[in-house]
Length: 375
Image 1 (cartoon, rainbow, N blue to C red):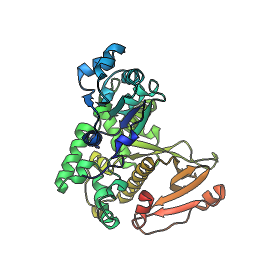
Image 2 (cartoon, rainbow, N blue to C red):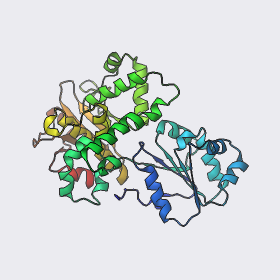
Image 3 (cartoon, helix red, strand yellow):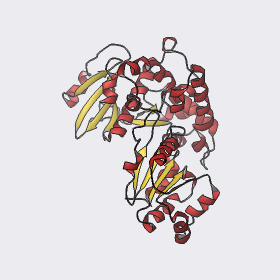
Image 4 (cartoon, one colour):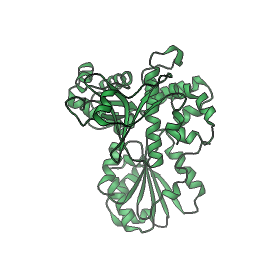
C-alpha cells in the first residue's frame, strides 16, 4: 500500500478540536482513517452522514442526546459529515461537553462541510486536505528514475489512487469514466439550488480546453447560455467540489498588466482528460503543453499543502502579451516559473524585470521537475 503523507493521523488529532479531512471523492479519505483505526488502542465508533439516525442525533442540538451518543468512546469518526445539516453545531457540542474526546470528520463537499463547521468550530478544528496521490507521496516507493518513467502516464491518467494502482490501461480508463460520470459532480448536482446540469457540464468541458489560458466569465457565459453571475456561482461550486481551482493574475501596475482575469486548473489530469474523453498517448495529442502545466500546478499545490508552506499564487501577463506561467509570493519575495515540456530555457520577460527588478526565475521541464515538487 502506498503511504499517504498524512499517514500518521493520530499525531494530527488535537486535544479539544475536530480533525476535518476534506478532499474529492475516491481519493482515499476512508482508507486513511481506517489505517489510523487499525493502530489505535482507543475505543472508537465510526458513523456516516448517510445514516438518518446519526443525522438526527447530531443535528438535534440536544446536549443530553449527543452526550449519550458519544458516552464511553475515546474517538468518534463521522464519514461524509457534509450530509448532516448543522453538523458544525453538533461537533461543537461534542467538543465542549466531552473533554478529551477525539473527533474526525471527513467530507467530499467543502461547500457544505466548510460552511457548516466554519463558524461553530472557530478555534476548534484542524483541517487536512487530501488530494490524489502526490509525487511527494509516490517518491516513498518509487525512485526518481521510476517516477520519470511513469511521467506520460501521470499526464494522461492522473494520480487517483484507484487509477494509479489499476493493472491495465483499459482499467484506468474505465475507472476514470466512472469517476467522471458517477462521482465527480455528485455533490454539486445535488446542491439544492442547482438547476442546469447540462450547462454545468458544458462549462466544465470549456474549462478543460482552456487549461493554462485566461478565462473570461463573459465568454464562458456566451458559450454556455448562462449569465455571468451564474457562471461565477458554478465556478465557485466546482472549486468547492474539488474539481478545479483558481489562480489569479499578479499586478502592481494596473495600467500595464491584466489583473481581473483568472486561470483555472483541474485537481487531477486524469479527471480533466476524462471530461473531454481524451486518453490518447502524448505523441498523438496537441495539448501536451496544457497537460504539463496542469500537472505541474497541481503537484506544486500538493507539495505546498503537505509541507505546510503558505504562499500567494499567481500568473502574470501584460497587455503587450508578455507572460509568466506561475508566480509565488512569500514575505514580499517573488519566485517566477515557466513550464516547458520541451528543453527551451527562456529568460524572464524584460517588461516584468523592469517593473519588479530581478526575481528568482526558473524554467520547469522534464529534467528538473522533481526538484520543484519534492524538495
